[in-house]
Length: 310
Length: 226
Image (tube, rainbow over all chains, first blue to last red; front, side, top):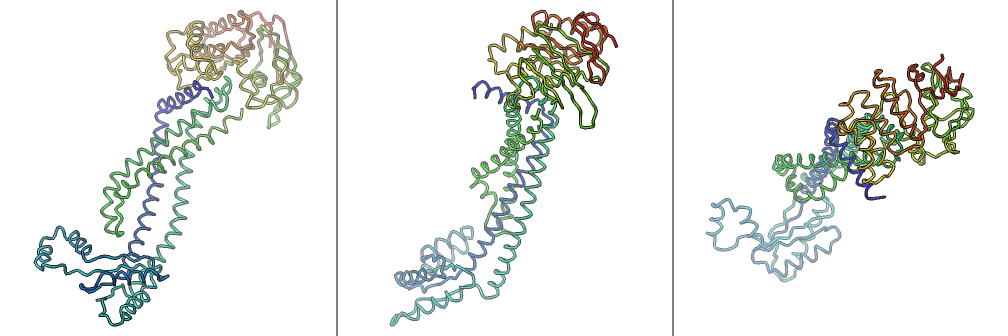
């Protein structure tokens, strides 16, 4: 294609976008709703997923060692645990790390930190944080750890205590997981319908916008314009609608996630949507703008087609 | 140059728009097609532009059967035919200048050609001072003159004017007819459909008279007789 033709197509698309302001504003608003729905769907998925993950993480087994336990023996037990098929991961938290974490957690609580300093030495225990493949396996893992400690012939036991959430907690968690899973399946379907509906509305809005130009398309045909030359500016215009709607949506998410960030972090356990949004901003830009531009281009392409058949 | 060969058009509701119509147009001719509303004048024009397909028969333009031209090549044919309509059909979001330039852009003409030719045709239709006005800022007569300028800017072999004076007052009608005559004097073939008796009688050119889809008269130097 010649450069001058490309230039004319872009100029015509921009001109139509600018001069047909009322139709443009209406189309952009509808597309913004669509893209907003897409974005909210992503956030909802992240919040639900990470919420469950957070609950799962909380249900790990913590093996606490006596303060005088030699580190090599702790690491031996870590190796043994890691070799078990039901174990997903084992994290070793040394006494120094435990102290640093404690100080970080209570950095605003001078009284506690003062009490810690008065003790003179580190009172915290080293620990192994064990995650199981499945929440039903914690009992077996705890038993295994206890057994390893007892088997160390001749030497004093080094495990002080093993804590993990009890049967009731795990039953509740399993039930919650079930609910989230089925809600996820139902939600996925609802979201598909919702996204499908908003896309259909966007598509129809663009169709209506192009319907108002059908006479124009007819005239263009009669003065000898080729299909591509007529269609391409409409596609540019549709892409501009999508791009503008995308930028508006991205801007809207900024204050919205900022406002909801604290609440989602407290309520769903861990995920601050604002931080998530900022951390994944490039990905969101690609998703929202990409969806907007593609929706605009495809809708316009299809909507113009029917008027080109003369 | 143009040849209608036993063209019949029957619409889906069984109304007959054209029945066994045959005639030819020579290069440089100015022919007027007259008849009451519903006589088939507009259908006749649409056939040449391949806007409508005949139920039977063929329409040839420079030995090409226009209804055998594939859809993606039809624009090449239409660029050889300038069209003017009763309702002007200008692009509403483009100025007078841009409307005329569009026809040239669509034909793939260069920016230099557009910059030199558009002012020239605007001058020809006496609208230099309205170049930057949008269609809704122009009177009916001015819009029709822009439409004529758009139709002639690519120097087509033939101009088809379908009731171009239908929406105009007598003064504007006279002006539009004078412009068409001037274009014809420069060698362009003109096919004009109208039911304006005054226009036909003043032209003193060939007149084809239609009634209920049939040609009932074809006079070399005709008058409006119905």
